[in-house]
Image (cartoon, rainbow, N blue to C red; front, side, top):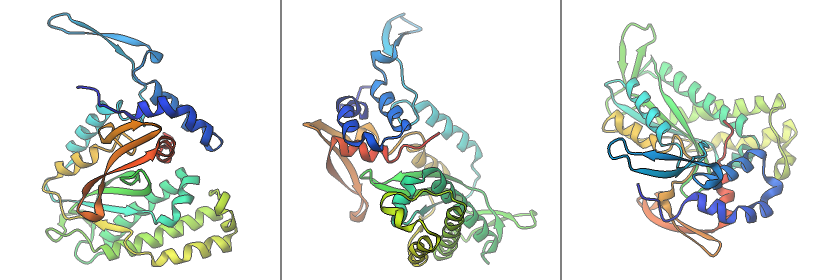
Length: 314
């Protein structure tokens, strides 16, 4: 496979020092580790090895990979293994794509408390799906599903959400038979949204009471229990935090869609257009205008800042 004209690693190598000078005070050890790993990936810095053809004996020198989970070049084999494992778990039923989104107002809180907030997002989502499926009059079943966290939007901005792949049915509550959803329809989005909002905000308040959340900088005024609860109150009326897409043509389509994102962060090398004069230009899909493809140019350091927002601990 030929090397793309531009790579994330090129940006990190060229502008890593400038990024550290501008944002070094905000960087955590994990950010520095990712920066160094991606910049060194498949270069002489990591050493190399020799590839030899089994048939003709032709040899080729190759540099070693960084194997960092955030590197867009190093996760292909793991992505393929994930796809195969999930494929074996599929059932011969309709599958639905359900998305649970964190309200934009909570983005700064998520950045300061990634592990806590994203774990609560998973917990609230799981409890919502299980409770709604068991209680909805047209289903009343125990369901299974899997969920994948994305924290980014097409422009690398912060947009935390869970992609859930859910079969169109489940085992009856007495575990005696299979119960299917109405064909072509999973569950009412308004029902899911109402349950999810309440569960997530209750979990968030409980985490704050236990002292598990950090509120620094511009969030510091909300540190007291009263101020924190008042800040969250308007979010109970927040609409469209859950979105259910029509069923895929087949479950494999669901896996292929999500497999592209399971082992990489935010953006693929193929979306990069140019790296010139301290600026990075890349393509993105404008979902507000029929998925039209557009380009965006950011300073290299701003591009790296947005990329680093989505770096998560293992």
